[in-house]
Length: 427
Image (tube, rainbow, N blue to C red; front, side, top):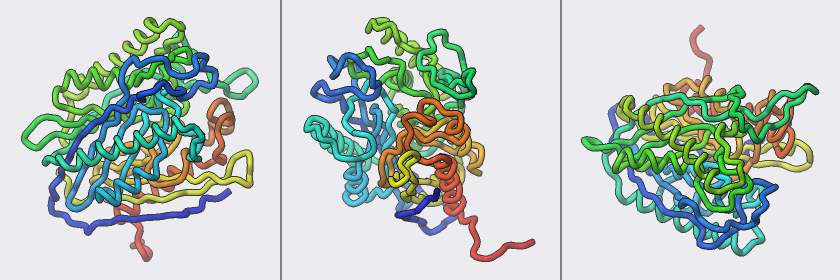
């Protein structure tokens, strides 16, 4: 098995040690479908199309500019996202070459993309994708036109609201436990959440990105209303507690992590209360941790990034290939982002956080950025060996692809930092 790089773009601005001005812009748009479409996820969902809306779905855009370099982060209350149109248009029309489209992996959102990125045969799904692309482009454009001088801050907290659903069984193989109504905190998990805050210079917080890794599936297969699930509750609560700030949720390596709070009663009112509880628990901890945000060093260089498409074999059908687009971003000497378009398991997030030699390594799972397809489940090696849902069931990518993707991110990061020399160093 091998990795074939089919596209590589390296954007390295001139290295300047003098401080450059950091600017930011924010915008949001509602993306709740106007029609009742089939809902995302849950092959055993009984209700068919959605029958209403409990709370709205949003896309939220943050545009950052350092010197003459720009990038955009868009978080969305969706299950998954693939859009080459958005990537192309934002780059060519708005001069923003890096676009991170990050889905919360919400299972109470519309289903409009098939597995991978093949065109949908449903006119309804095709129309919604076109509407979504138009709305998201508009939000990025709005954010890019309302830039303000900004500074960055960071804080970390820890709260275990998820459990590892791949349990080792008596036969020596792992299988998923989807409904954990006793809320047993099975591990391992990554309970850390990271807050990246964007403040207006001389003013108040304008954006808060909450990075966390737990499936957005508090609402189960009997829920038939559009909802942003617990990330939506958390964002609304924190925005109420931080007037003037746009709160955004970035899903991490949640491929094997389910929420400890699960609404599985089949009664809408009761299940939405469970969703509210989990969202408020995370929201309360985010608000508390926000008080401890520490400013980062002023940005001294333009952003650096590398985008490429890696080609892997299909695990089961050896004659087929899976193209996975990744983007590695060095926002400053302190912050680096690894974006992966699929359901990476939490050990791959931990690998990035443990080995990326920067103070703030951020893992963006479920994030489309540079072509290729939606990779589906991306297990770590151990999970792939022991099996279970997402590990050797409902996953297509070859064994070892997860670690190879993360090693590529790490290789790119050192390249962006100028660490690879063209001749041997000193003994």
